[in-house]
Length: 124
Image (cartoon, rainbow, N blue to C red; front, side):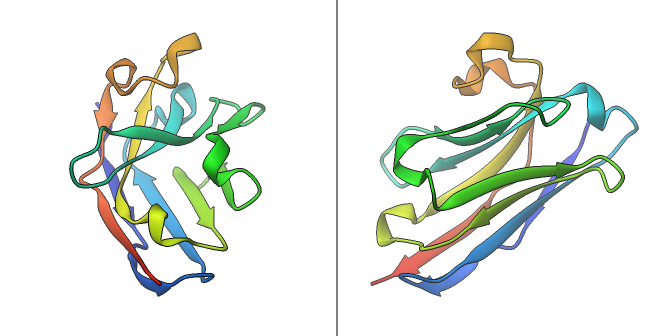
């Protein structure tokens, strides 16, 4: 069992930065791949960034490439999402997720554990 707790969301002006953190409980953090998803009102939950168990592989959706960066710290059992040059269209609730999704890492249904979400609002 893994519990995930996100933090770091908030209100920021366009062009600003935020760093989201997701703290995981338990000793099995390193056995799970991690994803950051987001969901805006009226829209489906979408993968923003993914990092493999050992951190050797990362993926970003096209709209955040070059602006967002995902990382993980196994000593701290934490995964981060650094978000720079934020845009109003980045406004959403951001969730971290843990699982063993394999090649299906883009799909929310492939993850086993979810945090409660943190709101990110970018004003224009």
